[in-house]
Length: 433
Image (cartoon, rainbow, N blue to C red):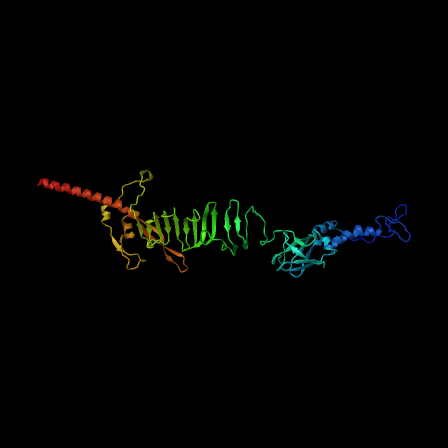
């Protein structure tokens, strides 16, 4: 659009010789047209042209939509905020005569500096008014961020931010539901704790920050220094605590007073079936000499493995499953007395054992492999750690001791056959003599 030259007075005349637009003449009381020439210029031409120019556009006579574009831009309600961080100022053009003219009007402000305390806004020098959150409380420090654009409305007394929940520091009264999950990039603060209700049953303590869950605000349960727990309707199901020698242990409970499973901070593992003299299984736990594996029934050890790899049991019977229906490729065992006679028995200590450790007895796997290959397997076993504390592995030979049972059986049967043959020969000699 463009501004037209003022309408000529008395203006063009019609067929009757009367000007189409003319002003009222007070001196002669001559009547004018409606609208009169000045009114036509003011209302029809200047008002929309002012809207376009105040909105920051340059009048363009070839663009018939500039008024529409100016209304859509809403630039009359936008301004960069000036003043101080906590005492904002803004200048609107045209200037409002009073705050009453701005009641309910959305104003968009670009914040220059983050506020450090409660903030105010002064529009065109009409006086400072408080900037409040949606719930009517004052904005705390750091609530208005440098470079962001906020929207406020004058409510008749103060300016209120349009969106009530803009920061993680905002509070929600009542339940807060998140349908698709809740993702928090920074810290999640909850001074009163965090609870997931209605079947969720997750409870955390004071706050979470720096990628960790800090639960130092939890109240102790049954005298224990509980750090975090998941609790069912009838008792504590899983707990992290600082109790006794099991510092920072993870424990699973059937009730608030009965531990069923625990993992102490030293890396052990313990499972038990009941209180009193329970049936239990422990790994790397303080159990006398049996510091690696310890199985207990009725309060007494029935099976254990010590730190040297020795196995202890109150019942040495091993009962393997040997059902014909579970086997295939059944064939006679090919080794017997001739193989048995080639075996070399030895005494030894492991390289990792001290010289005062009693020697063990047995065989060398590589020698057995030459005689009975199926009795020996090669496995990868941890034999140390490197300079960075990572485990190192070495291929070692293992020996299946159960192969010696059929070997002994075959050997005895072959000896028995030899004895019977010799007995028959001896009987024949005696009869001939």
